[in-house]
Image (cartoon, rainbow, N blue to C red):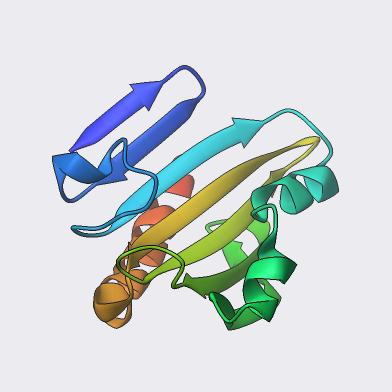
Length: 133
């Protein structure tokens, strides 16, 4: 399933996850291009209240922030596990730099499926950015 909103693309395995706050049924990929400073984009990608949620034991870092490349673009990536809802899920963040702009990409899946679909979402992202000029 997919849905395009002006400036945003959402792909999800299950239609019910296209508009849900958190993915409950399966993996989801959200791409939001931004025309702001890439550092500001990285900061904007992090959820508000992350430190408070982490202190309460609701969120934990799965992968520390690190640099990597998707296709020929530099990115900063990290992932967290969020247990604040009914079903825990993992959200991977990627801020992909393009000259003066950046794309904020979310790769999400229920925690029980992250090991299976996380690498597939990263491969999909890598291949799709290979087509960008």
